[in-house]
Length: 317
Image (cartoon, rainbow, N blue to C red; front, side, top):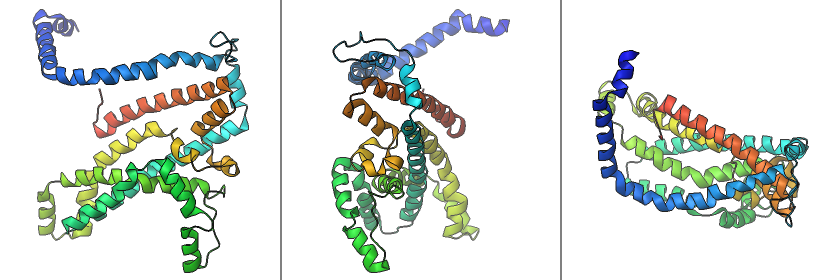
């Protein structure tokens, strides 16, 4: 221990570390300079408003402002005594977890299928087509989906004409609504994940496939024993990084598509905050829900960073 402590406090070692830091800063200062506007924006719009979390511990009155009566944990006690809030936690976890799982499985499958395309033109066209919905906001997509998924919409007419099925109320049946949200979000976003996995596939050494071909392995076995194992590090990384979004089930999507009929299965934490905190003007209760969600999300983000380093060798800091 004494030798280690002497090494750490050795002036020569400290001088070398200092010079290394100075050289690195001289090389990277343009990058740090580029971060300044973003840091200023984050400070103004994210850190300064954090003072407002005291509303969660007050009986907030707009006229009194931050001088409203202090009630401590009463808002949280009231919050967890509400059956509706407990239900929103389950709904959020159900929708978010299924979205995360399918947003891993579906892009991996499509990237493997696209990788088998031999015609580069059709491969790029198909890749572009599945990537386009990612750029369309849910405000626009919601209007399109309401028309497509209505009982008299084209999808129900197709199901009725082809399979003789009765119309399905995709946005009005509490049993169907969560799955409609899950699969529609996967349809919108899987193109982005497909691009990431395709980039991973291009980095695989072609020599591995050549050696497998010489050994008699056909395309299916090459996919099972070479392609998928080589993709697993990035799949693991994407999975653990998605862990931080477990409590984010897609506010912009659901708030544009849900209605009181499906609140029992479609109401999530974010929409609950919006409805209670803004529409019903219960600012203290809404702030309490938001603070609870932020604390849990912060823990999950830290956990995802640790798991990314532990299983995928990826470090942010």
